[in-house]
Each structure stands twice: as structure tokens, then as C-alpha cells.
Amino acid sequence: MINVNKMVIAVKGVILNEGKVLIVKRAIDDEIGGGTWECVGGKIEFGEDLEIALVREIKEEVGLNVTVEKILYATTFKTDPTRQVVILTYLCRSENKHVILSKEHTDYQWATKKQFKSLLPPEIMNDFEKHHVFSSKEWL
Image (cartoon, rainbow, N blue to C red):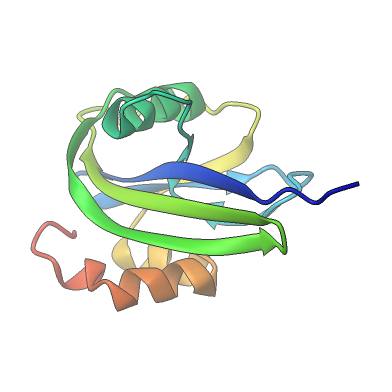
């Protein structure tokens, strides 16, 4: 059997509302990152516009309508030797705080900057620091 390398493209939203950002907790049985906190988002479908995919994923995962403002950064990593993930992270805003979680997640929190930094995995925090996300004027 031949190993085939696979690329996955995903979009994530740093969703701001009243000075806080929405984070969600992955279901414990998720094969990648189960039980960890993350920003909302998911894979883009073939042919789909990046920002349209992000709006769709956010609506599916947390039931919110958002406005996508700008891209914050892009990063990539391997989940195994044959699977590479590329993540594009965008700044978004929501006028609504009423979250309806999908089955992919078990909890959510509108987090302060301090809570956000303490709950997200170090790999994600490293990307935020590396790309100066916390020093941007839009952040909290």
C-alpha cells in the first residue's frame, strides 16, 4: 500500500464581542486535540471561498453570525508523517453572545485575554505570540 500525503486547509476565527473572545473545548473523543480549547472554525470545502467557509463553520459549530474583518496569521503543522494542516486565522466580530454548541465541542467560554492565554494549548499561544496578535489594537 502506498502512503499518500494529505493536506488539510482550515480556517479559524478569533471572535470578539464586548472585549472578550470566544473559545470552545473539543470533544474528549476527538482524534486530534480532544479535550483542548481552541478558536472556532474548521476545514474548507473544495472550491469554497476562505471567508465564506469561516462564516459557515462558525455558524455550524456555535450558531453565531459573524463579520470577518481581516486575516491575523497563517501557520502549518503535521498531525502525523503523512498529514499536514494549514490554518488561516481571522479576526471576527459577533453582535450576539448566545452560543449553540455543535457535537464537536463540549464547552465554550467568552474569555478575557488572560483566560484565553491560560486555556489555549502552548502551540496555539506560540503562534499568537509569534504573529503579534495580542499587540494589535483590535485585541481586547
